[in-house]
Amino acid sequence: MPGKALLCSLSALALGAGAAAAKAPVTASVLEFGLEDTLFVADATAGTIFAYDLPDAGAAPAQDAAYNLLDLDTPVEAALGAAPRSVIYNDLAVHPINRDAYVSVSYRTEAGEQSAVLSVARDGAVTVVDLGALPASTFALEDVADEGVSFWRDIPAPTLTVTDLDFVGGELFVSGLSTGEFASTLRRVPFPFGAAAASTSVEMYHAAHGQNETRAPIRAMTVLDIDDTPTVVAAYTCTPLVTVPVSDLEDGAHVTGKTIAELGYGNTPVEVLSFSAADMQGNVGTYVLVVNREMDADLITLDALREAANSEGINQPVRYLGATVGVATTPLPLSGVLHAADQDNAFILALRRNLDTGAMELVSFRKGAFFRLSDFISEYNFPDYVYADNQPSQGIRMFQNLLKGDEGFPDQMR
Image (cartoon, rainbow, N blue to C red; front, side):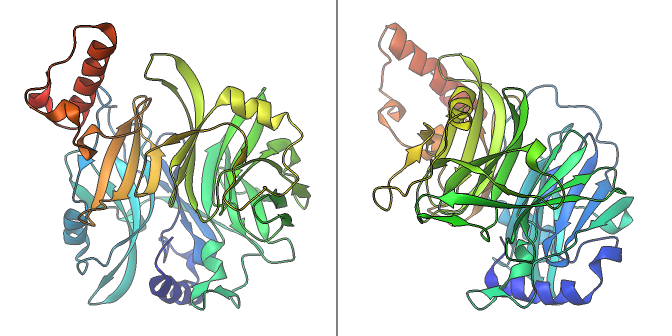
């Protein structure tokens, strides 16, 4: 989510600019790809979703390959003409064909505060996408969040009108805020745009707060089949995990999601991703990955998710603040991640801040490992280290060589 002061300024611009009729958003916030070359861009402050037809992407890459861009700020600032350290990275998506990264940003120049969508290739080439020159259609959301409400003095509620997008089965699922007593809303928008959206208010039980909540919006979600039932898996701030069958999301309905986990307090989830991958032992499974801003990421197997979705759910407070309950998860060391996306069969792509330098990085994490070997200096990095001649040690050697190749260190393979 953009910074407070920048959000406030851009919100005022969007609300007065009639963005629903524009060819480009005033604020480009959440991104999502549809089939092939359709890019959805949400202008949350204006309550409008744009669908752009991108140019032909060409052929898919010959093989899955990692991103290793350790200073994204410099080429981004150069492409935008932005002031140093003025860029706010709003979201990340991956083109389904050429696997280029698309990044929505807000930034500051001598002309004032602006917004853009960029494409970034693995070689670090950054291109500003000329949204105004692309064929586009728009969808204006009804009952958007009340512009008279703000949080922490300077975060306008309309900036939360769209918190996440997920395109599944010809529908765009839109989470966020609306007006009314039950402000947390899930919308189903048919695509191509034209038909009316179904809008459903959603509440859930928050075990860390010990109460049902109707206003706090879903922050991140994915839609997947659980026992052949299309289901929204949604994460909220502080961090309940909730399931809602898609069949319950009828226009005008009010539904109560099933809370299946309490993952920890004081945290904002930034992405919920679903994918199939092999683990470090070579076993292929389907997973849900909850990427968090303040905590470790949570990896959940489809089997565990299925069991939790078929359970009674959580309806009692946790025993103490910080306790986690519900579906079993595996913590993953994805630290400093601001946004993430499913890159391809082999990798998760992430925008993260380097905790030492503060630089923005665009880097890939191999599925099944979910960490970058070059983030660490360990016993294995000493030049005189010798791998033992046994299966476990040789397995570690092969694994480390794989990650060294991913991260651009083939010369250090041993």
